[in-house]
Image (cartoon, rainbow over all chains, first blue to last red):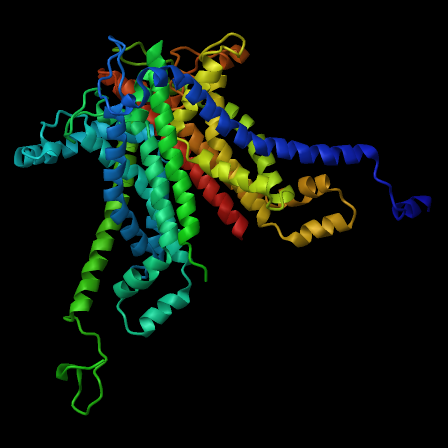
Length: 315
Length: 303
């Protein structure tokens, strides 16, 4: 009897419960701020580590291309050039492929089931570790494309970008493996943004008598452009920072060559390759290069977020 | 719009039938073929990679491979057992760090922040952190943990590798927790608070369990991603040709599948290259398994 009465009595919250409540809130705030702490710590550590090299070379570091641990002379132009060229050219190939694939699997050209299978497969491609793609690139892809690269050299030798014979590892295979790596990002984000375009836009386009591709090119793609551009920028950031597959196939050459068929380098590949056994001022110069990579990818990411906000259309 | 005579039937009714030869129809069909071709090209690498990994790696799978240490450079035989264990250890360390911090951060964003300036800043920071190249996470841990020997005087260690991986997992865990909690209906929160539950109890007993599936899906995906990462490990966890033993193993260099693949792929010995393929087989199977599990979790939730 008394037990059931007690059940309905208002209970004053014990102070211990309040302590738990408040401390849980502060715990959550603390854990959330870890993101900011880690981000600033990364920036500070990399900046701090590169101070010596920054003081020694200043901005000259960006435009000189001799990287010579023996003479203790460092300039990162080869790696910076390689980072920009590989990421830009891979983007140039991957954007049409990715957006085309996204259109193909969002339009009702073939049955939905097959389209979904293609979509899942492209997403699974993103799950394959880059080191495995690198292994595949060394032993399967590079030997396979070698004859094609040799043909390019034989026919277009007078062009600076094809001016050296392909010897195996090089910038061109690295670009192709980057295409494989960023294709899933571009495809799945473009697909999501195309799927989010309201159906009435498509119906209206068909209603005024356009063809499928009239609707895609003039209505659907412009409506989905914010998401697609965001995906492309994300892919650019990814391509610039991608390390393993590129290190394994690019050849890691410290000598500058304008030829895409020659071995090259990227900042990320250089870090992976040299950081482990570097000492003294080489560490500082590598940190300087890491700082540049960090600034480049930060800029791309912040620009992407801003662009998506700017371009997004509201329905 | 005017119709040419060929587009008109005899009685003056416009001919609305589909005309194959029309220029715009030709262009549309051409574009369809090109898009189909692009889709085929996009799927091709996955099939090629999977086929090679399954065939070249699958051939090597045997009991010795899964139970023995890797051989010295140039020698045949041996296995990748210590790397399999090492991958699990390093990934677990990363998960133990990243999941509590990430879920806590996500809880703050979704349950406490009310969209203030600080929360906006944290969301922005999460996006930026997810864009930080993985090698930079390695450089950071090298610069803080490895060179300072802060972990009981050890430089390279499994713990340092796990920390580097946790930096990469953190943004994914925060984002999925935040988004998972946002999907929980506000009625549940009001109901819980209405019957007198404290905010803590509401979050821990009501909203968090409700959002369990989307959060679990994101966590599993982030674990799958961390398990395959190599760049943050090559100069934090390093590599070891030996077994890692007990607690001591956590504070010493450790072998992982991904670093083993990298090291053995660039060696000039065929036996080592073969082991790299075998390790790829194990790693890819593990990661695809986790991905399919996450997919199943997601579908389980939508039912």
